[in-house]
Amino acid sequence: MVLLVLFALLAGAGTALSPCVLPVLPAVLSAGVTGGRRRPLGVALGLALSFTFATVALVYVIAALGLPNDFTRVLAIVTLLVFGVLLCVQPLADRLEAWISRVVPKPARAGGDGFGSGMLLGASLGLVYAPCAGPILAGVITVSAAQDFTVGRLAVALAYSIGSAIVLYLLMLGGRRITDHLGALRSRVQVAMGAVMIAVAVVMIANLDVQFENSIAGHLPSALVDPTSRIEQSSSVAGDLAALHGGGPLSHETGTSQAAAGERLPTYFQAPNFVGTQDWFNTPGDRPLSINQLRGQVVLVDFWTYTCINCIRTLPYIEAWYQKYHRDGFTVVGVHTPEFPFERDASNVQRAIGDFGLTYPVVQDNDAATWNAYHNQYWPADYLIDAKGRVRLVHFGEGSYTETEDAIRSLLAEEGHNNLGGHAKAHVERPDAHSTPESYLGAARAERFANGSILPGTQQFDSVPPSSLSSDQLAYGGQWKIDRESATAGTDASLELNFTAQRVFLVLGSPGKPRKMQVLLDGKPIPNSLAGPDVHNGVATISHQRLYRLVDLPHPESHVLTLRPEQGISGYAFTFG
Image (cartoon, rainbow, N blue to C red; front, top):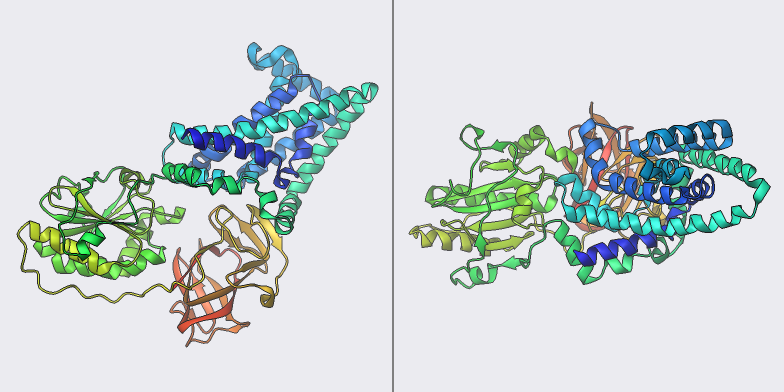
């Protein structure tokens, strides 16, 4: 954790020197070079605190109050406009400074030298600065959105903020020395700086700052856009990042080699209970289960989520095992830990359970409490527990079905169930190792976009010719509202994808009402013979949020997929098979 905090401090300083911060820099300098001598310190401190709040606490506040995801941006624009006007109209600025000197406690006023007003302005700049956070803070935000606060997570965000604030504070001091030499022109400089703040706010209203950031991200080397990327990829830092998400010390397959060899399975640790859960399904009266209740049975705890194609492909085998061995003392508990916000909805989970034909118990783990209790970090992940409540086998991902079933049979045999018959039979789709990798549409994990870096906000994208897309590349066209985890179609929206796969899936949703989406393959409406079951005559009807199967080819091929969704349809992630 110490290493991660130090890295966050360095990453924050690096972000403050990156091109991403250029749209924010005029407002920062304007705030710091005017007012009392302590204002730069107030701006830096306010920015650090509000940035920490924006990257950790505000995630919960926005979700709890149902506020739009761009609320912080709107708040920052309003604050910039207000302070810009105040700097341009000196009597108003004097009244505000006098009011703050009465409201803010004396130790915080630092002698009335602009510290309090600087903190207020710095707080607004922290909200503007939040989108510039590098990938490490994106990870912190993603983890925070699904988990409770921890001191470690807060320390990482605060260290990042302090690193940025130190660099920006030094920049403000440098600008202040220049303005100190201007003497009589100081009042005019203040008005000019106020005009700069207003101009920055207008630029943000028009989303020109986002377009600028996309432009520089698309034309500069990644090392300049994100100077911390190489550090983040170090094994030590990556390990600490994984620990934030509950990553444990288990290997990819723990115990499967012993199961394959017919050896007695090792014992790893006592299985944690199901903690912090919500609704239960497929139990008597939908009542909760516990590990203690299940003592005497062999239990497979399967971590999954209903839009994960890798999870979906394992479900036929898990259901087949449950049907075959349940009467011999075997049970399954599917722990549904969501990846996207809409997967927390109990009705969506219940619908998915019915669609997949699952009859074994399933529990919602919306806060990832049980996930963390097992130190899990994968979808899907299976933990096989013996009749004494001990974890005896762990497997992450797809495959190793025979080894896992042999392990189930081995633990049942330990309890005296030897007449088990033949193995269960199930039909599963096998993943293609050469398929296009999973591709996310939201800003938090967007990669391989021809548009350059994808940042949050409503944006107007230029159309990208499909012929110009390289393998596995995507491109937005028209208007899209980009959030951290999703993208919502606006006017004339389109999405291009150059893929290699047999099947193409996309997590989609249409809040409020069903909407249509055109599906084209190589520029023509996809024929029914090549379309997935969710597409008819080249059109998909999008309603509730789930995984939609758009393309179903006879064998893996390379094509360009074009989607033209109606305004209001939201997309989350492509997966392939």
